[in-house]
Each structure stands twice: as structure tokens, then as C-alpha cells.
Length: 108
Image (cartoon, rainbow, N blue to C red):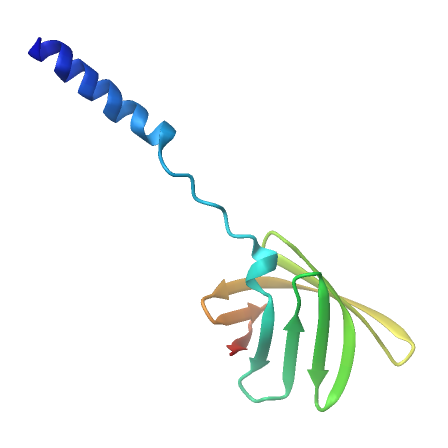
């Protein structure tokens, strides 16, 4: 009887991870949603959940779109009759975002 109980407990312990709580993977695109500003206040990005983007650089505003693919973010906007399509390496660390080596802080 004790042996059967011990085997049952061991089987339950082995199966527990298979039926345990499933955590939802964070969507990188949702992680960038919000307003981000560089440390000097020269550049500010505002990302929305629907893929829209607003950028302010040196008191000039631009509207566009963005797309996150893994650790890359591509930002598209139009400036002076030219379409700009920039791709950066994206790293998020809490309220800090890095676009390549440029550091941005999330604004509350």
C-alpha cells in the first residue's frame, strides 16, 4: 500500500509541470507602447498599441508607423518629401529602452 502511494506521488510530481500554470509570453510590441525620451530631451518617441508612432526631434514632429520583429524595431515616417525607414536593435530593460546604443526612458 505504501509503495503504491509512493509511486502515485512520484507520478503526480512528474506530471505536475505538464499541467502547471502557463505563463503568457510578453509581446515585444506591447512592451514599447508608451512615451520614451532620450536623456537630453532632444528626441521623444510615442508608440501606440496599433502600430502608430509619433516622434519629436529638436522640436519637429513626425508621424509614422513601427513594427517589432524579435529584437529589431523598424520605424517608418515621412520627412521633407522623403520616406524614412530606420531599423534598430531593440533592447528593453524595465523603463529603459535602447535603440542600438541610444538610451531612452519611459515617461509616465
